[in-house]
Image 1 (tube, one colour):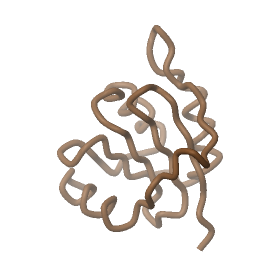
Image 2 (tube, rainbow, N blue to C red):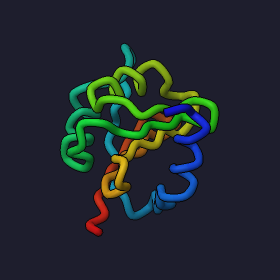
Image 3 (cartoon, rainbow, N blue to C red):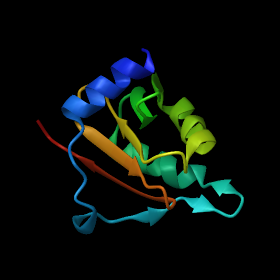
Image 4 (cartoon, one colour):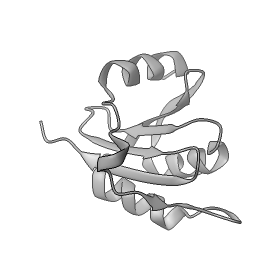
Amino acid sequence: MNPRRVHELMRQHFPSVDAASREWIHIIAPDGLREPELLHLLERFIPADFVLIEVHRKLGDYIARDEAIKFAAAHWGEGEIHIADRDFRGFVVIGHNGVATGWSDKK
């Protein structure tokens, strides 16, 4: 899936983030992304094998959940990273400042 299509889907279906009502955790350490913490968020809120991930409108993809961790590690700080399953039932956000949150929306 190309970045343009990912961006289109995210704009249509990714809900706005009410930052004040979310519980945030630090997932960035001085030596980079704390992969176990991000994996925990993904397992908890997005149980799908493949996820949509977007850093900005020109950088996004539909990839395996394990690859999403490497993708996020390579691009954190370039934009607010949004991750969701294809059905938009589970969501994870990684902020510019290295904190992350997640939630699920039972449809």
